[in-house]
Amino acid sequence: MFRNETQNPEPMPDAPQPAPAPQKKSAGRDLSAAIGVGVGLGVVIIASLFVVKAVFVGVVAVAVVVGLWELTSRLRERKDIAAPLVPLAVGGAAMVVAGYVRGAQGAWVAMALTALAVLVWRMTEPPEGYLRDVTAGVFAAFYVPFLATFVAMMLTADDGPWRVLTFLLLTVVSDTGAYAVGWRFGRTKLAPRISPGKTREGLLGAVLFAMVAGALCMQFLIDDGRWWQGLVLGFAVAASATLGDLGESMIKRDLGIKDMGTLLPGHGGIMDRLDSLLPTAPVVWLLLVLFVGSA
Image (cartoon, rainbow, N blue to C red; front, side, top):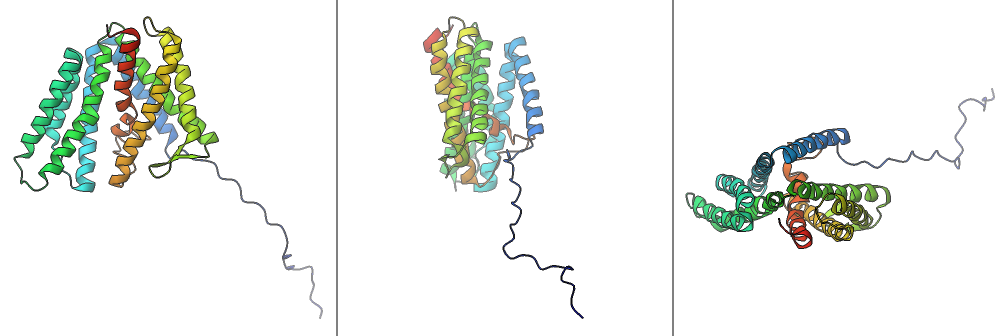
């Protein structure tokens, strides 16, 4: 019998295959959780900022202590570096309060006393690794609480809450611009060995978004502010926020971790939210003092 060639035909060797469906870009995090947590944090910050200044200072101090706990915990877990948390936490909170009450001079005195406390506290343990541990402790004291004191110092001006709000808005807008433009148009890596996700196009987006927001904030939120000052401020914020983000990425790569913690769903830890804020605080404080004074 002849085989029916219409049954189970052999596939044509050159038949075109359907193209695979394109994969959508992913942000790499739970976006809904990130938005929810971000909105919740924003409500707490804004409420404390405009109701009672002292309450906002307390919020900053708590964030500093939690950030120090995350940083010292990761150093101990990944590198066996025992930076003493107790003097760092006490000194860090005191540093923020001193910056609010006594200004830059109070912040420097508190920083010096915190560094001294770290050196003395570590003397209660064996000498092996002493230099390594106290170096990490002094670094942590400068990196987290000392930089955060500039936020408290911004608050002391007559329009202090609006200065802090400007600082927060510009940093968030810079990060948002970098993400939005980089996600859509990013092609050229900015620093692939440090943070492969960042692109030069994203940096341009951060600069443009921050400069526009800066012009609006200086014109409408800051007493005696001018729109052109906001352009300078926005550019500086985009630069410092990007460098701060890259700096913490460098630390996390050295530690071999993705996030500093898991306290904030969709965001990581407190330090993962402070990375761009901390180095930006002294930049904004200084430029506002130069542009409109410290009163």
